Image 1 (spheres, rainbow, N blue to C red):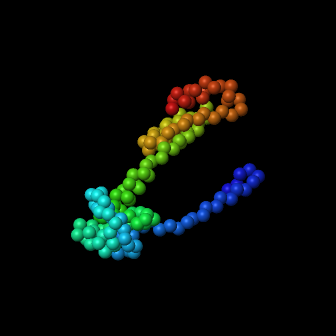
Image 2: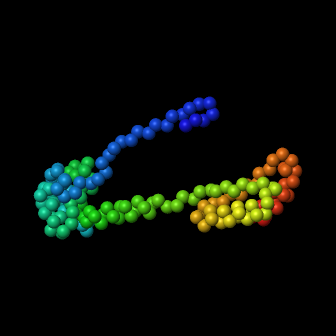
Image 3: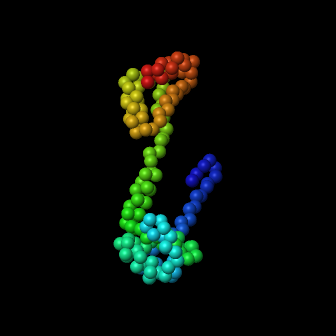
Length: 154
């Protein structure tokens, strides 16, 4: 990035982490603390018993806290869990309100003002904010009332 007379270099280091949980036979540690589908604690069980309990409930055994002592596993519908996570992620990506600026001059023509008004309507329909600026140059500053007329017209 270049700013003035100095150069700033932005560096990003990416760390690759596996965020996928281990499911069913992927879980290798034994024993594990098991939580039932309804949230009840089943206690610390060997992995074979935990898998049997999940099969009996016709659900998946998912490792939710692999760093715990012993690791914590939950009996749940893994497909439904992933779907809800993805749905929650999309809900977090709401529309960001941006400020759109429309610049006019005191000598801007009537048709040009109508075009800019229509454009600002489109911005407002997309839930953005609109900032109208009147730019003066040189002697135009002596006639501020012309700028006020343009703003009133918009």
